[in-house]
Image 1: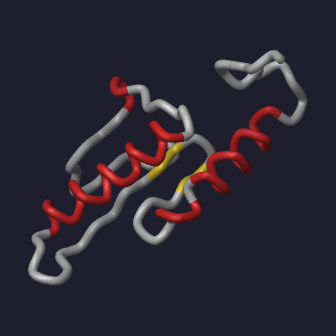
Image 2 (image 1 turned 180 degrees about the horizontal axis):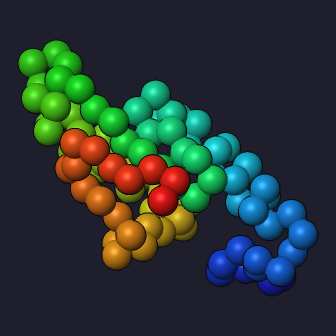
Image 3 (image 1 turned 90 degrees about the vertical axis):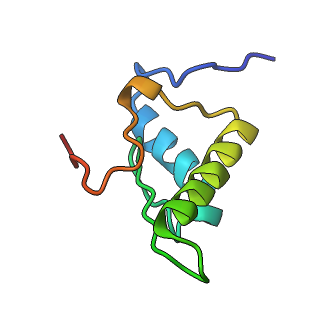
Length: 90
C-alpha cells in the first residue's frame, strides 16, 4: 500500500482534492477556523468570562490537535499567531 506524504502537485485535480480534504477534516472547527484553499484563519472573541487571548489560545490548541490527529502539519515560517490583522490572499 502506497501513501503520499505530500500532495502530488503534478496531478490535474490536486488543489481541489487537497481543498476538499482540508474542508472535510476541519468542519468541526469551522465556527472559528474557516479555511480558504491551504490557508486557515482562526478568529476569536471574549466569551463566558474568558478573554479574547484565552479563547484564541483555546481555538488554536483545538485546531493544532485536530491537524496532528489527521497528520496535517503547519509550516511555522508561514504562520502568524496572535495578530489583530493578517495579510489575506497575499
